[in-house]
Length: 183
Image (tube, rainbow, N blue to C red; front, side, top):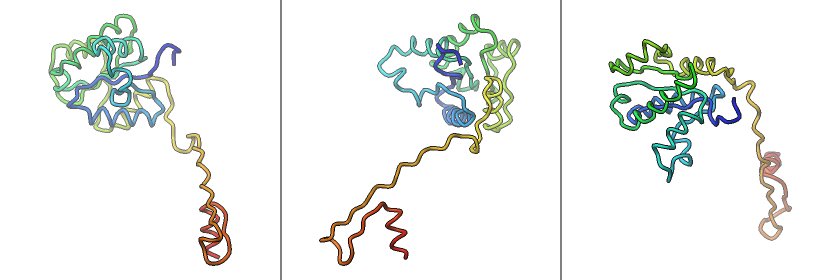
């Protein structure tokens, strides 16, 4: 990924299609793709002039823009703002728009884009769609077998003072206490 780009993919969608966008975002993350999905990054727009911030994100901060076209998208004012920024970037960066139609939207802009840009295949399988995007972006899917192991914190040490128990003093962590108590 280019040093000046914060995200491999920015997802543009209508608020009414948020469930689809959230599922796509999660599937892309599982494939190792860094995404701009606005609910995950409120710090980028909170308290900022939204129109300018969205233009910056879609035009400069992401390598690719995934546009989730639907009847909701073509009717949503903010989606139109995002799409305008995406189209401005397309003049500068060839083949960086990855559109997907999730319903039978019929719109002049969508139809014009359809003539000049191929849409991502949508077969009602979000994981297949995410894998297709990952392949285009150039990132191999991450499988659980090759993900780095997360280091587990050591269990807390427990010390029981002699005056709080009847019997011998016990010291150790929760695992050793459970083990010793089973003997």
